[in-house]
Image (tube, rainbow, N blue to C red; front, side, top):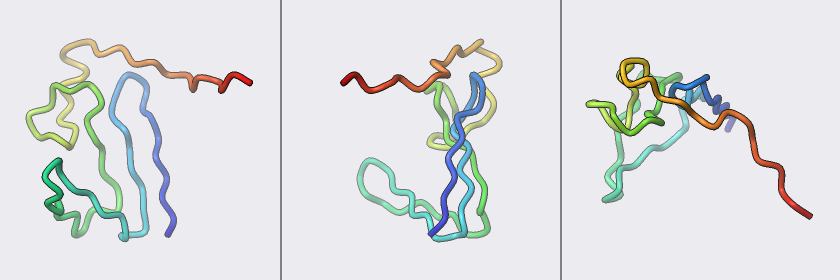
Length: 73
C-alpha cells in the first residue's frame, strides 16, 4: 500500500493513496472512501464536514505548526 500524507500550509492533511486506505470515525464505523484516492482531512477542527476539510481553515485564519519537531536524544 502506498500512502502519502502532506500537511498543507495552515490547512488540511492531504491524503493520497492507492485506494486501500481505511478511515473510521471515533465509534469505529468505516467511512466510505469509494472513488477518493485523494482527500483532505480537517486539521483546524472547524470543518462542518468532519473529518473532511471544507475550507473553513482559511475563514478562521488557522495557523498550524508547520515544522516537524526533532526527537531529542
